[in-house]
Picture (cartoon, rainbow, N blue to C red):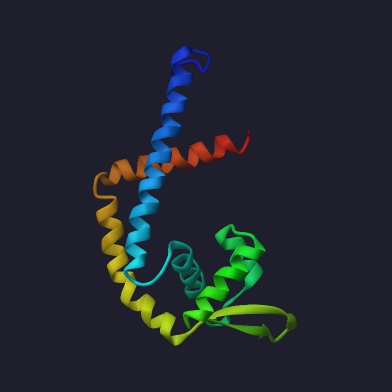
Length: 152
């Protein structure tokens, strides 16, 4: 293994960031086109998936924001847009009327039932350039990278 102080490490660090950025940008573009076919954006899809996983109880807006790693203002705007699309509704929490919970509508549940099989095929196709071993290795490397960046 090369020492971090070697001149080549600086070049490789920059090159790695460039390649990660290009890959992320391309993934965002591909996912954007994929979700647009269903009238969704990636954040809308992610919110619907989080609410689906939460079940009938739904999620407090603050909890949904935490799960999606977005600010309170962003989650409010996202829920506003999903409400306009008749995909979610807000309901006061019966234990604390100050808290509003987001819940899926029947329309959203049906939409997800239609999308998820197609999305599964899509994700397999999007990652088809990698073997299962390479996918596992990439996951491990990305996790290691994130752990290392926590110290910055």
